[in-house]
Length: 448
Image (cartoon, rainbow, N blue to C red; front, side, top):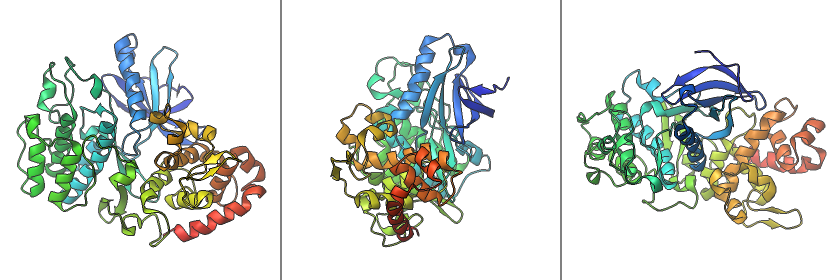
């Protein structure tokens, strides 16, 4: 296969993978100085309108399922020959399948990884999406700033929106991980198909092999939970991924990862899930407690950061890994200086509102796709505005990478002014130095 020199504005480096419908390339975004993964529709499908629509639908579904545990789409375009492509964040540590080449993992680690994957699957279900092809090859692993990892659900190529999954649908999935009902063209797979797929991944993590139709017995209470999730009759399975994750956490003695049942939309998605990955000796664990210990990696114990915003702040501060100075502590310090964590802040003089002191017209490009048609007031809610800060700084931060001074405070300058102003001032602009000083003081107080 010939390696293209460029895909759109992205400079291609090497092939990452190839499937029946698409090819994925590792490329470099020179504008943002960041590696990206570019998925391109395979050439032999270029003239098939149904496949092209399905390919574009995947990008739209991924954008709608806004979660750090679902792969994110940053750009979309078309090649000169008409084939569509979309651009995603690069998972620099490969896939769960790569990891499993070394054999099974200890039970506790396997359960914690399964619970982390469940967060992404729950986010898909909350947006009416059934993945239908959960397997280790579709779970990406991405490094986090300063160490640690995040598991990310990817490849929604055969996913179906629940609203459209009725009547006759094409069977799809991967043998060994695919729910039995997916073999029938007349079936309408629902969330329970993903319960089966997630349990199959858990089975592979624990035993080193996928279950197929004859799952081997896992001799532990967690094994009984997984066995129920692998029932041939979907009515006998756990009713949804939250119920499965809750039962698995209880059986393994892990904290509850996914409070709330089917149909219950969390007010603060990540805060309600109470989940963040942290590094520990021997691997990655899930810290899901509400106390300061759950965030001790990112924040100093006793810091006055409101509990209900900590998960969203952590999401914003770890949105990307290649922007010097960006961290959850910086996001918290900026929020403290901007609003004092007041979600009702309203400054009509400057047209700045909410906890992040956003100007609505500035905020709009950094909103998740699911809020693009929502009332402006909803876009200013903390659960939306705080992660948008991370996207803002990940987009503009690389453009001041070479500016002298404290990288974190240069990001503060960008947030308060612009890239051009910070570059011209060779650091924080004079007008914002007092403000940056406040952020710096809070940052020292918040850092662990």
